[in-house]
Length: 348
Image (cartoon, rainbow, N blue to C red; front, side):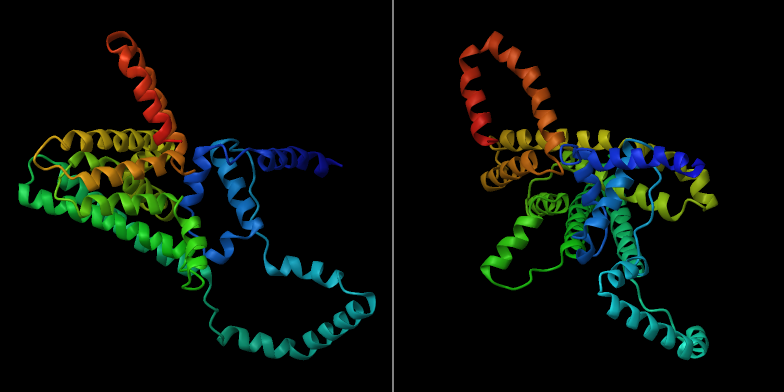
């Protein structure tokens, strides 16, 4: 009875975690898009529920105890119990006989047999590659922003930071979603629909837009810096928490970054919207690029609706509306209706 009463609070917490509305929380889409797991595991309900509980533990209830994902050995009795009695009894006796006959040989060969490769080693390799690229991007972006860096080196670091982020995002897309099952129109459409709403796809298009442009906007590096800083801090906290160098010099910064990911996401969304207005202003200069401005506003429209960025962009646009609309009504009331109609038409 005492143990049952001790487990009641955790059972209620797991029920609350299962009933939480993850779809309407923009932090869940951002959290899930940064989880690196093989594609065949991302579709399993037990894996998704496990990471939902970890998300709930991190952002909602730190007292929730998240149990590890069940292995194949735990599901073996369930499969055996589904068999008819005669088959289950015969299979049990056969398995006991095989265990008695092969017990000594398995003990001697287990020590010499190398462990099979697991997905965890592959996952660690992917995380290391992503960390290396993102750290490299962060250093290049800082060099591109510093005013004392020579202009030639700054411009080269500017383009390389976008190129590195594009490669990192595309690699993350490939590791999470793989390639289309078949190279026909239907398979490509299904694969593209599952990829186009992810944060990695949005950042890859965002970076390619500026890599191929002759217009140099240092302001566009703010989302790149926020993304690389967040990913680097997460990797350092998970893999170097026991290092003396990390605890002395980097722990406070990494803890602050992980505690303020929402602030960084809001800063990125506001910078992305500001870049859209800067591109419109650049249309009146000799360095205008009409195609880039049009494509970027299409990307802003995607950010407004994609689950990973919708909450931050919609909040930023609401704040802009609350600031601008009173000024328009007061000083230029004839513009209020056209601007509202254009906003509703563009972001519908």
